[in-house]
Length: 296
Image (cartoon, rainbow, N blue to C red; front, side, top):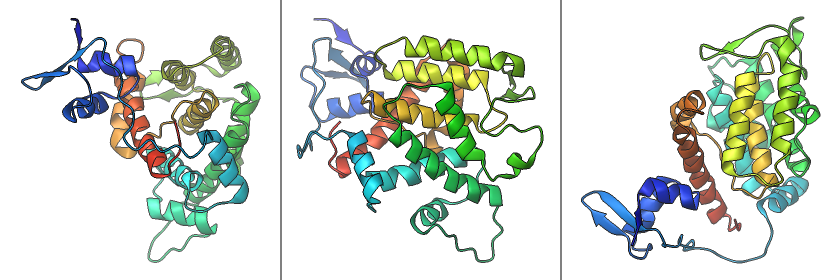
């Protein structure tokens, strides 16, 4: 019988290596053998079902998000997603708002400050990010387009100090060259053509996998089409596309930030860094879905 490694099995089952090891340790992978600290898994082994798989209805995550958004239901997966995605994505870009402050802004549309100085842009971009998530929930099933991507950027940056700068294009592609992480990005005059080519290639595929979504994300970030806000817009796009293709979404949390950045740098040479980061983040979101008893 042929055996696979944990890494090979994780790729085959489209889950994280940690989940594979947990399944093996729990005795839920038939024929798995432990040699020292290394698991060997039969090639024919079947991915285990979730223990707490509770069938209430066949509603998709997108349906639940749309229903809870429409009713402004508090305390559900819509509420959780708004806070976690907004806090973590903004925090990665330097926002100093705490998780609690982010939650308070979402729940009350106000913010209480005592003996603290807050950056106004952090507050504005937090409120704007909530609106971006509403947009991608409403338009999750539409094809990804330049118009939609620019609309996300327009909502995110409206009302910020950047919007008052003559050289900053809110809701449009950059006017000045920029770099990210020491890497050159597309020049302003190259952006439109490169974005059209990227979208044409991506939309030509009828179905999408996690790898397809991550590959688009890397290409988008390397083009870096906007003067600022590329990371947040890019992560919003990933969330939207996961909803469209019924893939469990992933939110890159602070403890995964360095792995995420390394994955962006190494993509094309070593895809495992970003893939594993995405799958680990997916596992975390699955915990939310399990708690709220939403099928995936």
